[in-house]
Every structure is written in structure tokens, then in C-alpha cells.
Image 1 (cartoon, helix red, strand yellow):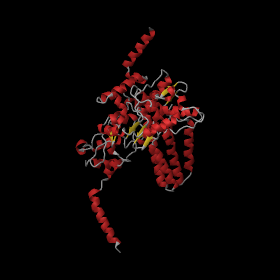
Image 2: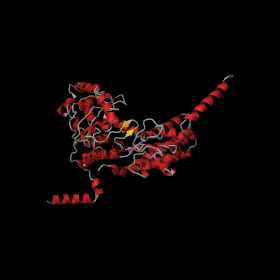
Image 3: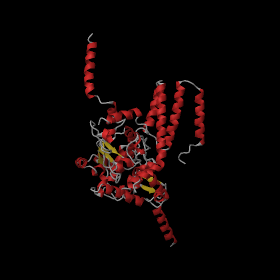
Image 4: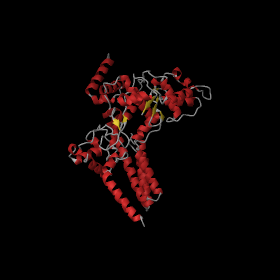
Amino acid sequence: MRFALPLGFTALAAAGGLTFAALAGPADDFAAAYAKADAASKQAVALKTQWTTTVATLKSAQAAADAGKYDDAITLAKEAQALAEASIAQAEDQETAWKDGVIR
Amino acid sequence: MLRKILLLGALALGAAHPARAADTVDPKAELKAFRDYFVGRFPKVPLDDFVNGPYSMDAGLRKQWKAIEEFPPYEFAVDKGKELFSTPFANRKTYGDCFPDKGIGVRQNYPYFDAKSGEVITLELALNQCRAANGEKPLDYVEDDMAALTAYMAFTSRGKRFDIKIPDDPRALAAYRKGEEYFYTRRGQLNFSCASCHVQAAGHHIRTEVLAPALGLMAAMPIYRSEWGGMGTTSRRFVTCNSQVRAEPLAPQDELYRDVEYFLTYMGNGLPVSGPGARP
Amino acid sequence: MWRAPALLLGIALFGAGAAAAAPSAGEQLAFDRAKGNCLTCHDIEGGDSPGNVGPALHDMKKRFPDRAGLIAIISDETRRNPQTVMPPFRRNLILTDEEINAIVDFLYTQ
């Protein structure tokens, strides 16, 4: 089914979270935030519901981190995650809602 | 006799349970409903005129278009397309060898459902498949050579009525259905489906542009767009439409894009090929 | 030595000009293609080449006396009309609450 994430993916994501929690520092905080955003973004791609805004915001987040601006980078990563999640919610809603617009 | 009873029973059920009826795929009925919707909504537009997109919706734009058509901006593409089409491959075969009727006057039959591969074959895909079969590298779907070839093929088919077939094959019906679903599904940060602009807002203006009706929307492809300052294939248009609603585009000629083209071109069945077209 | 008076003169001139012509934050957001982009679909006074997908936005205080209702329309009109073509500016994170409020302030001057 379209929305079932494979078990392995979920396990990996959880493991990733634990690993990052053990470290400290803004770079690591960013890495954790980016990983979450990237995971949501990849899920959106898999559902063919990716937004251009998500892609651009992830890029900006990485660019900010590369420039050492970790506060901005983390904010942008969180924004990207929110955008990705909104796009996933859109696909989930549209899975059935699309039929309501069909010309009959 | 039993079949008749079963069929009548099914029809009766369908009538009594509209939700269930809506879940069976009936392209013929949907085509009629689609056409009736646009004809009903735009009673002053002659049926064949819908293939002229925005020009069928706006008298001022139409005047400008008629002036442009005196020296069509796609002419160079048709000429180039003819040259490319007639130039043999390294192995001495030509594009004509891949197509029925030597590829002349056939645009109205694309896309078609290929039973062997179980996929929808668009004109652009067929051209690249032809190249591959003859040891040539594929053309970029959004670039000029592909636009030129499809422009030439459309030009030789002008006036012929679209005749897209949906065989009684569950895979073909599934492809049609997927294309239909894509067309009506909201996407992108702006939350627009293809229908948002080309059904609901058809004939309206977005800033200075007039939205073309979905009926016959594929008939003028490929198009010379003033906005692009050049030709664009169907692939290019699908990709740019996606980005405009802030949806990340699929790869050109992605299976889903081909399904959309299948559905949308079928919805224009009976209308004449008008491509290549000029658009604002 | 002449820089300070020149600067003050400049600020005074700019200030005078700005007071007469500067669009409000809400108007800027409404007309900005990357933000509200309202002109694409709506006729608004002072905007260039407006579209007509949606109704013209005039007499807004009279037509939408309930501020919360107007905010709701901009935030997510699909809740009221599932088939609307109006983008859900808040739900899809196109505009923030602050930006929507600024736009509503501007619309109430129309």
C-alpha cells in the first residue's frame, strides 16, 4: 500500500535519532534537524507529491549550515520538514478527494 | 440470456449506487460528459474551435493571434522538423520506417496503448524508441529537436480528428484512470490540480494570460510560446505547469505524464489536430 | 563636513516622499508574486494587470465585516468550499499568520 513505510526504514530513522542525541553542538543539532527534514522530503518524493519549495528550503538550510549559520540552518531545516509534511498531507487527502472534481 | 440479465442487473445497481458506478472506469461516458460540460459552459464557441485554447475564450487575444499566424513563429520548427525527419540514421533507415503511413498524417493517433509493453506510447516516446531501435542516442524531451520533429508530424496531420483508442484491456483502462486521477489531483504548494486552471478557471484571466479549456488542450502541441521565446514539447509544458504550482516536476515522459497525456488527448477525441500552435 | 546636513536633507526628502507613496506591508505582500500574489486572480485597486479568476476585492469592510471570516478564507478556503481554486495560504505554509493579518489590514482599506 502506498503509505506503509517499510519496517527497516522506520528502524533506521529511530537509530539515527538515538545516535544524534548522544552528541552535542549546533552542527549536530542541524544534522539532526536536516535528517528529519530530508526523510520527510524523500517520503514526499516517493508519493510524487514533492513541492519545489521544500527542495529549495532544504538547499537553503544546507547552504546556511555550510556558512556556519547554524541557527538559520536549523530554522530552515524545520521549515523544510513542515513543508514536506504538508505536501504529504496533501497527497493523503487527495488520494480520495480528487474524485470530487471529476466532470461527470 | 443470462448475460443480458446480469448486465441489466449491473446497470440497475449502477444507477441505484452512484458511488459504485463512479468507481468503474467508463471512458466513453466520461468523454461525453467532458465535452458536454465545456460546450454547455461556452455555448458561443464552435466545438472545433476549442483546440485554439485561449483564443477560443478571448476575442482580443484571438485578433492578436490571427495577426501572428500571418507569419507563424513555429514555421522554422516545422521546416527543421521536416529536415530531421527525412535525414536517414547512420544505418540508412529513417523515422518513417518506424511509423505507420511513413509517419505522415498520424499525429491524431497518439498516444496509444501498447499491449506488448503494457504502457502508453506518446509521439515523443515513439520518436526516441525509433532512434534507439536504429542505434541512435535519444533526444532530450524538452529541447528543440524533439519539438521540431513533433511540430512537423503535427503539421502533416492538421485537420485530422483525434482518435485515441482505449482498448478493452484492464491495463489500458488503468493507464487512463491514472492519467485522470493525476489531472484532477491537487498538487504543489499552491494546491492546484490541472482541472483548477483548465476546467474550473477556464476562460478566466490570470494576470494577463487567459486559461485554455481542457477540451482539446493537447490538440495544438507542440507550441511556440512567446513567453519561452521558442518551441516547447508536451513534456516541457507538463514540467513547467508543475513548477508553476510549486510542484516538483516528474522526469519528462515519466509513465504518469504519459498516462495524463493519454487521458487528456482522449478527452479531445473528435476534435481536429491544430498543432503546431502559437501561444502567448 | 558637509555630509551630515546632506544626509539630513536626504532623509527629509526621502521621508516626505515615503509618506506619500510607500505601500503598506500588507499591500506589498498582496502584490508580491512570491507571497500573496493576489493580483494573479483578483482585481485590486492599485494593482497592474489583475486576473479575474476570483471576485474583485472592493468594499471589503462592507462585504467581510467579520475579520476572522476573512482570515479563514485566506488561510484555507477549502474548509468552506472544498472545490475552491484559492490556495490555502496558511495550511500550505505560503503565508504566516502575521502576513495574513497584514494583508487583511490592507484589504480593509479597499
